[in-house]
Image 1 (cartoon, one colour):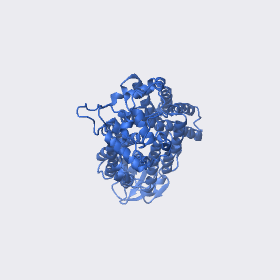
Image 2 (cartoon, helix red, strand yellow; image 1 turned 90 degrees about the vertical axis):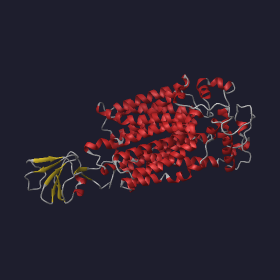
Image 3 (cartoon, rainbow, N blue to C red; image 1 turned 135 degrees about the vertical axis):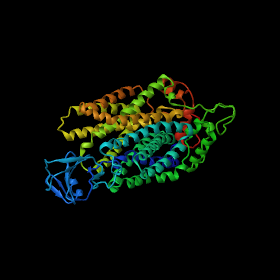
Image 4 (cartoon, helix red, strand yellow; image 1 turned 180 degrees about the vertical axis):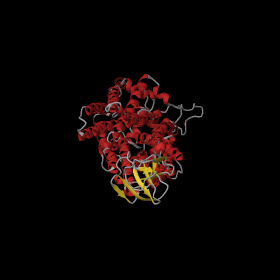
Length: 574
């Protein structure tokens, strides 16, 4: 068996990088609305051509020249039309001065107030066009603009559950192809929507497929890479997602028209769409469906790519519970159809149910804390494009620390201290004087860093805690709780009006509770992936007894040999 450690994993590397490249487009679409739905400065439109503009003591010839001096939206702008009429323009109303011949900012005479029936005038110095300016999503239609991101996150929530379940039923490869193609199609379609409601609907569908791809991609790479590379492989999916955020900042800086901006962002998906149909199905899923011949074909392909002359045989690795030899397809015709699993299987017994509740809480807390800390950092000031770029870049060292901790300390032993550290930072911020702005910002970034570590590793930890038959469903349902947290986060921030530290208090309590409950989870570092609910239950219930006797089933260990050693012949001798 000495030659096995020298085996090259070229096939797995190609499959991995092809899969995670598409995760970058998920990060792109998740954050695209940051610039696409921005609301620039605006005032009511007027029925005529402007000859002069006045704001306090500043007088300009056109409205475009006054935007830089108009610092408060509560103040009005005075304009004089070519026909001599003088108007006071507010954001959601306008007033015509009845008896005024001189252009002056202060006026105490009679005015006639009108609604903005002539549309709105927007500041286009930064953005030539956004969805807000396209469909006038301001004033009494402002709530429609505020629904753009929540409806997208609702689509993310729905997609995580639906596609996670479908991937367990139909396979990982089919879902990855469909969702990646959907990202390209819906991404381009968003740019050509003709009204607000079709825009929201198409974005909702885009959110579903983006979320579905991200969930299934985590499961896909987890099942394909070896046990030694599993930690870094799964965490670098997050890194590509963060790179997508940086791409949004770069494209937003270069392209200032929203539909062109959307097209450029969607093109990033195209390379993967053209080649993703060549990706193979994972041997894990094929074996769980008893498609042994198909699994053998994938292993043989891995052997040819990795230049291994003696590929392993599925029949030698897997304990097939049939009287006859291994057969292709789904087994004998008389065998009952395979059981279809659903979310209730995540609560099949007390041990799995307790595990599910804890994992869901960590997902929720990670998302809640991530977005609360992010929203608290908007007062950093400076260039918004650079700020977004740095928000994406700051995640990269976070994942490196998470990888080192998970490999050296274990998944559970890394998750617990960073969750508790997040809670302590929340408490620390409450005691920092409000005039210490730099220290407050650093503390908030430290909180985001620590919650980011926990948020990053929960994907891999969830995939390792559950067996193959419900793994995609477990990650998908966890991602659903993550989206619930991201939807709740803005409302949590609104509680600052009750008490300035209320959001931090809630995040701190949730992080502390999650950290305490995580103590009861089993450690998965260095252990084979399980394939049945019985195996997953046994890991958490009685690890000691499992080490003293034959495992309850050989499927997980056998499959792990495929994972660890690739397509080589694996000796059954000890």
